[in-house]
Image (cartoon, rainbow, N blue to C red):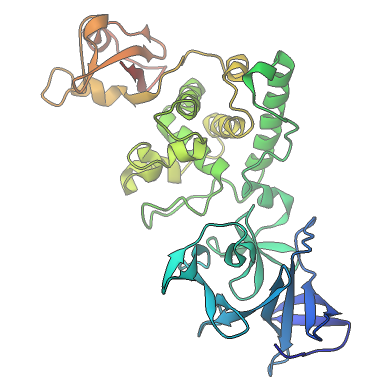
Length: 399
């Protein structure tokens, strides 16, 4: 690439956004500009950026030096960065964006075709200058612009620390080092509870948290942070005005993270296809998660439980903080639906003794209903008990 600008400090204007660019001379006389509009703590000696003055009077990002090797940026007709080439003009990186401006995947040109590349050291993944030349912050899934974070899916800037923390998936108050069960003490349970409470309070005070969501497709939730997705799942699956049900649902999520039959991360549990209809279901089944009553105690409790899931996965700590009425169960099913179909051809549950309990013909165990207790006979449960102030779910395990 040619040498372009020679002064030491310039003011770069991209659209309506100002950037400070520092110029440095390299041994091959190429002028490189270090991007100075980055999140606090960003300091990477492996990468530098080059800008060129356009005919419109602003500096356009055109090149990057990564680990001493120089590359060029490639733009599409909409002036979005669509890829990266080497200095001979050979495209080696392709970016595929979704309709809102997020990169869906990064591809590398190998053996005559484009192949998705997940190597974190690959220049396509290591480079964080995307979209129209803004820095993409992977922690918040936002573009960093003039000291603020822009969320392209919400099409709005995040206002202050409160809104920004809504988008992160790490507890900003956490001081924990390990979730190793052998290191857990009552004091650490107290610490985890306090940290989750502080995080939840910050989330609940934010105007960006708990907003109504429109169902445009089965991926309606992807613009939300993990903590908010978890809170909405717990809130919807709890489905009553009683916070104890939300705690039971959260316990099932936690239990699944400990089971080899399910993903090990809570967010992957609730977004797993075919599992939580409140998140991955139809317009109707997701309505309770998409539209929440943010002023209720249930929403506050669901938020706390979501924060706790991302603060500690120690079951010992959860027993101290939440209690252990749900003791190892991995599944739940609507009590109302089960009762309405009982003794019909579509009945989900059958069995009049502990040894004959089944779910659609599969033997089950450890069956529990909040407010009722351990279930030993579905005949007794459905024929002599009508829930009013306890639970919407039947919790159980597969034998």
